[in-house]
Amino acid sequence: MEIKDYGIIISSEDFRENDKLVKIYTKDNGLIISYAFGAKKSKKRFGGNLVPFNLSSFHLKRHKDYITIEEVRVIKYFPEITKSIINIKILFNVSALLCSQRGHWDTNLFKLLYFLLTNLNDAKEDNDRIKIYLIFCFYLLKKEGIINAQKICYICKDKKILFIASDNNSIYFKCPSCANEKELLVKIDGFFLEFFIQALNPTRTFLEQKFKKDALLKILSIIDPFLKRYFNVDIELLF
Ligand SMILES: [Zn+2]
Image 1: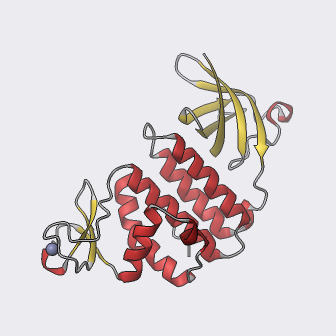
Image 2: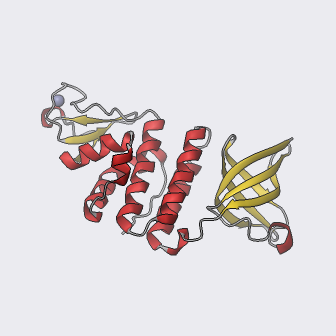
């Protein structure tokens, strides 16, 4: 069966002597794990088109047990994207998170990945890079239906929230009296709360707003254990 789709390669690794194992996040078919046979032997066939994190059009073929890349053509390059070390670490994490998402894809996630790449490619400062990465992470958690974003204590409905917490099924806020040591529990402040709520449904104003790098890194350190727990992946620290 033939598959024609747009996609973004999120990882490409050597496989056997002459081939490559290529993971593609596609627009209409979600995550596809495919093989580019002969990619290492013949440079002519795929050229530089198997480099990750460009927007490409794919012609794939579904065999009984595997999928092969028949043809790939880059439509849009993001030439600046790997020139920043922070971007490289972010892309490593994004790739790990998306690969753990098998089966839970949607077209919005593809659009979000494209939006992330465009912004990482254009970003001039680390704070902009971290912010866009945070928005991506919050979207993933929201999409999985594990965030309860009401600004009240999950148990007693009190407005004095002091913690973000999680059992194994969802993420919610808690007041000091309802905090429970058996949960994953991290202390938060007003800035985290505001950023968190806004990042879940980002407005144009929020997207254009500048934040301090340290403040964003603190948010990242708070959310990091939740990401690791839910997606069960190794996440590289950005700094
Ligand atoms: Zn409470």
